[in-house]
Length: 149
Image (tube, rainbow, N blue to C red; front, side, top):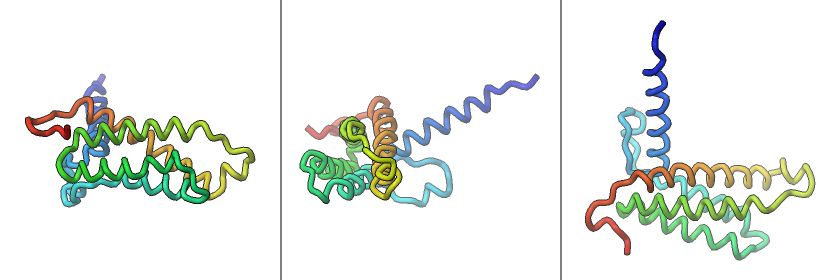
């Protein structure tokens, strides 16, 4: 009877690779598709864009505190502070996820309208940021002189 341990090992490795590639934006995989891509600060930028589109009209001040911090995390990533950037992205994405979960749409049409889909996308991106950024921050290696403070 053949062993499935190699298949399970490959599946686990691909999950770890996905989390690392999502959370650590300078991580390169051996895939020829991703090897040509530059470092991607997309996850916090996408979340900042979704949050802004949801809470800019009508203006809601508390949720609009999140996009500048997430964009600052993007700039930290670009300037090679990848572990710190992943930690900040995970923490603030988690806070936004807690804030967004409190709001419940009153009618069914509010849930499946354009705003509902954008809210759902923001919550999904936020949850993936929490998991991937937390993974990278927990497993990340800091080199000497690699701290922000």
